[in-house]
Length: 82
Image (cartoon, rainbow, N blue to C red):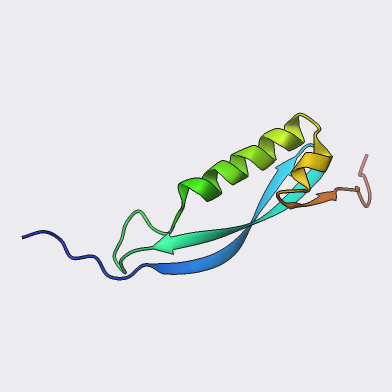
């Protein structure tokens, strides 16, 4: 008959987005439905859209709006080699 699915395992992870001089930390949940699942772990649609939203806000320089959805940091070079 049909394939039986086990209860999903959900892991909390932090994804990092680097856009220009900023890095955003976004908390997401990764789901792995079966031990031999070739597609897992995967993001929910909601978390995937959240990552896209934060990335686009940073690209458009809407930093204040991005901080409502993620932790945002500026990058400062420590040293340059020339």
